[in-house]
Image 1: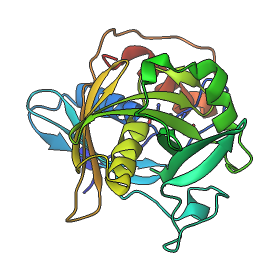
Image 2: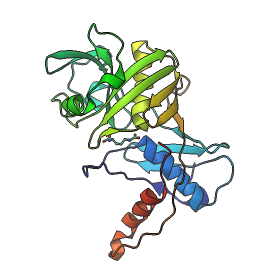
Image 3: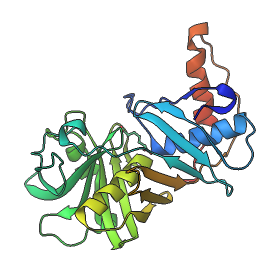
Image 4: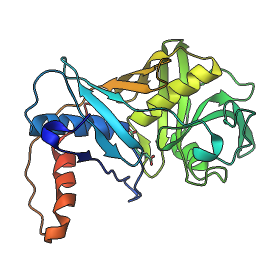
Length: 259
Ligand SMILES: N[C@@H](CCC[C@H](N)C(=O)O)C(=O)O
């Protein structure tokens, strides 16, 4: 599937610590909304976006939401990557991770970028995510020795097989209001651990996302909002070769997701 009018789109994203992740779920929804505005697209439209995680396919819905084909999750532990001992099928699903003497059950999933998903400690109750001190515990997961590329970590509370709530500590960014790739990883982990079905509403501090891990093609689909809140042209002194970078800057200043 080509870009609109033959244009090939590429998205790059930077964390607040300056590191460059492979992918960003919220970012790609904003990117799609930006392209829709730029190209004056009407109705249902989809196109392809090159990212560090491969080709991603967003589709603008009739109701303005953006549905994104996020591709297949990567479960092979060494590819996530994690040094946690792999299960027989090479995954790190429901593995034990020791953090400061406490054993957490974790499932590691890559959506192009690495995620460590936990539903709680070994033998513990269903996690009450609002009670967690993310600033204290998050960095211990992010920089744990079993994550050679660091990790994003999602802490998940299960309400029902189709409704969960998560809080996230992001690699390179800390606690954030939402994480699209994280919400996808959460549903994959929830299915694999038997906590939820393949269609889930994931509540995040910034608002809900609809996630489907489709059995037919093994792809994860994320649906959520992306709204323009401000248009502004920013003039920055730059050399000719920096023009590509300026395009990204204007995008991030002019588009913001509702969360
Ligand atoms: N911090 C992440 C990249 C950003 C993820 C993003 N918030 C999302 O919506 O997916 C990383 O370093 O992988």
